[in-house]
Image 1 (cartoon, one colour):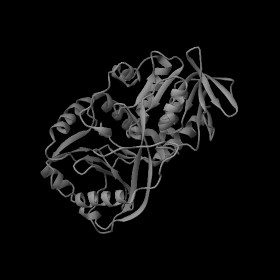
Image 2 (spheres, helix red, strand yellow):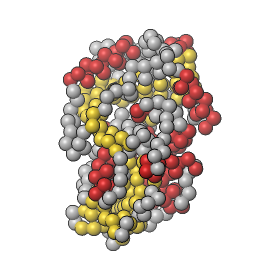
Image 3 (cartoon, helix red, strand yellow):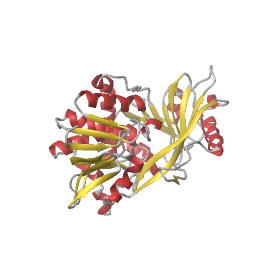
Image 4 (spheres, helix red, strand yellow):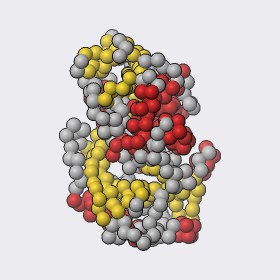
Length: 390
């Protein structure tokens, strides 16, 4: 291992792994990636991994579009199947709040997103599994769908290593090293690892590293519950990923009539200690989620619960991620605060951040708004939806 790295990335979820890979691809010589456990063992591995582009700001829509473009060719680029399945994505808003998504569709189409607004008649005709009660229309993306989160992060890590990157799994970063106001590396159990730049991609654990180095990082760790269900054969069931805003749940197919299903916004968020939280689901959550999806998708009535678990969201102050360097701290970059968006937008963000680090240029001007500087300057990003819907 080199005595001094050009860049050290902390955290091998998809954000950190993809950043490390794109830094090497951009020509950075010495890049090290440190992970306290196994790659993808945090939020990435338990992500529902829905891929979509429906965001209410041009900033996030551009990033999501870039991520979809990357996912399209990612298996070939990394030399391993990342499980990207463009099976489609549908967003179902309540009938009394369709003006926002219709407007968002217009904005996104101008950006090049392949999306369309479907009337209630078109929804009913296209999706025979759907209970139309309370629906006046919906948004459909043909390139949406899902990917496999663990395959994706493993593929990034393997490609990073093949390119000469230094991966250190089960090697915890205990602290950031800050000298004379500059972040100069990290501390691990074996000692200090020096670096010209440290990227803090530690997810819910990122504030502990930042705050201990006197770097402010406003973030919540909230507990997110998910379930896996198997529908009965011979019934009409969705083949695509679904965000049912009207019922506040999301689901994505896994194959063989199985689905990852969780609660969407609006909902209550439970703040927890990321080092000590309940990893099993609550009984009332299982009852509630089954009632929600059975009402909207009658074919899922009587579905069998296969598995359930709880993971973490690292939630930023305005529900948009923190990405990029800061004006008042040298030697340091953020890539955290995914707020439940993390997996689907990580490739686009990582590619953009690597470009920013290596060349000083951003993929587009608005990308700079993702820096934590916006919080310090009291200029949070405003979105049209609430919570992590975007």
